[in-house]
Length: 200
Length: 222
Image (cartoon, rainbow over all chains, first blue to last red; front, side):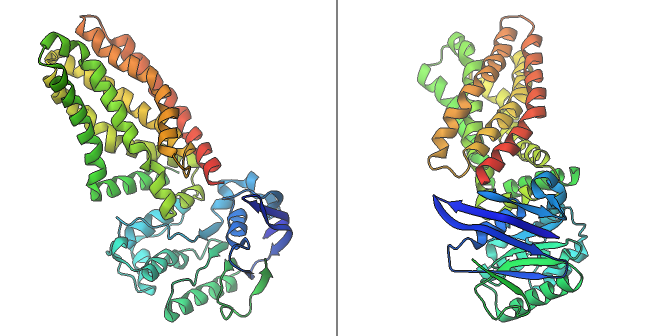
């Protein structure tokens, strides 16, 4: 599904990684590991097309992602460090806009259900939520993304309590079980033991 | 594709409705600046009538500029800009919706209030329509051009100053043509030439600016 060949990344004149090759098949999960500043987030941004590599290429189903454009975007979910939520909107409004942008059909009951699984009140404005609750509201998108084959998740377990972490683990496992592919970064070594690991 | 544009328009208008200070700042700035001129220059009707089109247009231009910095910055800070870049719809369509929302929040109120401001300058009532029409055609161009500058300077230190330096020269034709339309009408001549030029500028800006904004956003985020 996803291939990266001879990837290199430099930030501020510092080489983060070079000659990195990876491939991800349907049903696989891949954990990016490494110390802070080793380039995990940069690699995820390159994989989703938000950043350009210093050299190398990322391919989706054999096609360079640069050539695919929005077609590739429709095939992935990227949840980055920032929550991607507007403080002034409610959790449900945020999720509805996010899904529309991503081209995911999400009727209101499905949005309420997804937020309910993460124990977030749909009518609550994001500004009134704690950091962990914001993270949960952002991750609720995963519950609506069954049909999106590739999930790229940057520290999905950060700021989550054990119940929410278990739910995210369950969603990732279920997605891989359906034939989806997941790349994620985490410092929690215990998370998803059956995953392949790339150390940066 | 249109669903994404509608979603962004709805979202930005909803955010503006719940954070009214942003709308109020641009509008109050326009009202205060335009009200300062008669106070400073004095109540000489002929002089006020002569400077009215230029003052109102320059104030509208500065008011639009005032709110540009936050156009993409807030989305950049909270991560929603990344979602737009990775959206299913072309980024140009989303950028057009952002610029439209910016105009509806900061430009449209000026169009509505401009005739009231014109009263301070003793502008003839028959000119109110031309003034409002020139602003109706010109302020969306300001939003579209300004959005290119806002996208290019996104995330830069001192980006506010750079944005002004980048955008203000590009505003000059709109200012000259917009203020010129009202001056022509006040001289008893038909302002249709200037208004058609503004309309042409709007069509060109609406056709090309969204793609320039999209390209600038990609450059800024890479």
